[in-house]
Image (tube, rainbow, N blue to C red; front, top):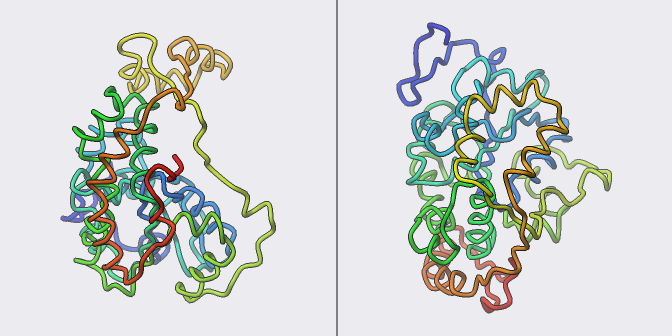
Length: 317
């Protein structure tokens, strides 16, 4: 790592004269499984915005926390080396915003101090927070972690015992982290259901908030993206996750043929249909827990979200 002065709030080298005098100033902070990856793709074509080449650099996440929760990303230089982070924007000139998106930026208290680090780095940053009906988001979060071998517990036990699912869907908790460091005018909330149903309208409103002209998308640029599959996977053998997260496997992936890698993955895991799993108990528990937190979030943003008020039995996974 270069011997540069460190940012005391981040602990990583932040030399002066960054990105030819520019700084990343647009942050899509999540929430996980709420359309932030799709939004990253939709923002990229706008001539006034350059989004980072890596969708989840996690640069403002505490490195020790990142190593424990996502060791694969923690080994990526862009998560902790300033120059590698800068390299995510190969042509930083002639745009108004340099943007990035990392869902770990809205997982307090499990990822601590992120809002403070971003504010210290770029006090005039714009923050975009994508949210989704909180119960369905938490369930989708569980399935993502289960597929990545980060969650071994059955779904109802997991959402009761692992607070990350509840806390990440506690949008008031997450938003207050940023309101402590940014003016409310610097934060834009986008509801995933609105983005899915009224894509052009929501994006036009976002560009207006950013002070940018609207962008005339081709239909292909607004295609549905990153829909979760109806299947998941689990380990066939113990230690599959440890091998997958290891530096040895990371090195092997660089030299092994793609077909061999696919065969090894298939041999190490088994696929099943998520519809075979009864989610009723987990959803009912999450609904009881999160309903008052949803109301607090709506109070914070000054509006009700009608699409979140359907009976829990009607809410899609």
